[in-house]
Length: 167
Image (cartoon, rainbow, N blue to C red; front, side):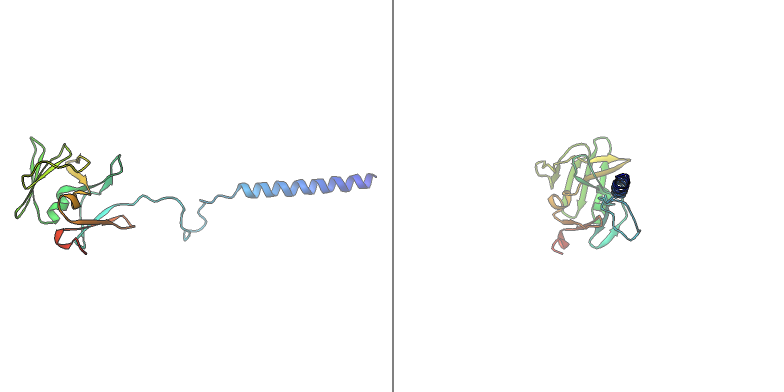
């Protein structure tokens, strides 16, 4: 009877050790743990936006998403790269863009623009001024400049002017 009690006790201790070992091993499992530098992380990456215009990289302040999730791009750098002359009237915050017969005016403080002296039209997001740089919503490319844009997986914003918008 004593031998039987010892065997049951030994079996109980062995089972308890196995359960304890299994619990401690499963507690170390972390699906996001980086094991090797070659393993891809499961965490979402925030793209670092850069701009490419008509297949040429553009030096400009970095685009960003505003609080509403609208992608904002630098106006002057983009439009000068597309061949526009840019004028800034600081007293009123008026921006004038001219390229041949195309004449666009807009306010740096309000959502809207005029195209060749038409009635004001809205873009859906007003420009944002940061450190002297005016950022406009990316849909300005399609809605005002009649171009096209595409955002690549690496964060590159490919912008094409009206002549190259079918590429």
